[in-house]
Structure formats: C-alpha cells, structure tokens
Image 1 (spheres, rainbow, N blue to C red):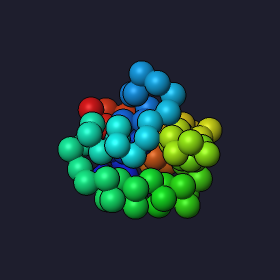
Image 2: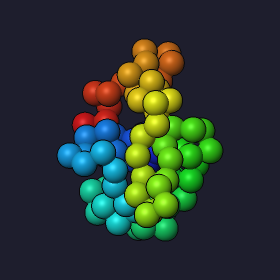
Image 3: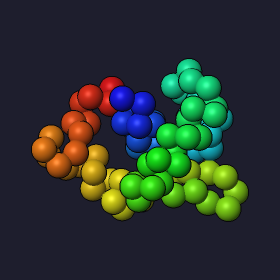
Length: 79
C-alpha cells in the first residue's frame, strides 16, 4: 500500500523531514499522488507538514509503525 510505503520512506530517511519531491523520487511516483497520500496520512494524525513544506512522522505515526501487526503494520513490510 502506498500510504505504508510513504510512512516507511519518512521513517528511513536520513533527515527527520522530507518534502513531496523527496518522497516521490524515493517511491518513483507522481508528486500529486504522494501529496494526496500525505494529506490522508495527516488526516489520521500520523504525519505533519511544516510551514516550509516538509513532512515528518508524528509521535502517533511512530507508534503506528512500531505497533503489533494487529495494531499497525510490520516494519519488515516497508523494506
């Protein structure tokens, strides 16, 4: 799923934040598609956007990624 892949790229990024272009390049996906999915993730409270247009995982996003398979996703599935 693309939303999980976006979360994975934010988690594994060497910087704590990525912009839409950075996520799109890492996933080889159109920027408009990535932007849409980032907004969906923001609706869930798992990512947030800074004023400069960079995105980062929130505490809730980290909790989701670290949860059990019943609570969230497996980090192994993001590789």
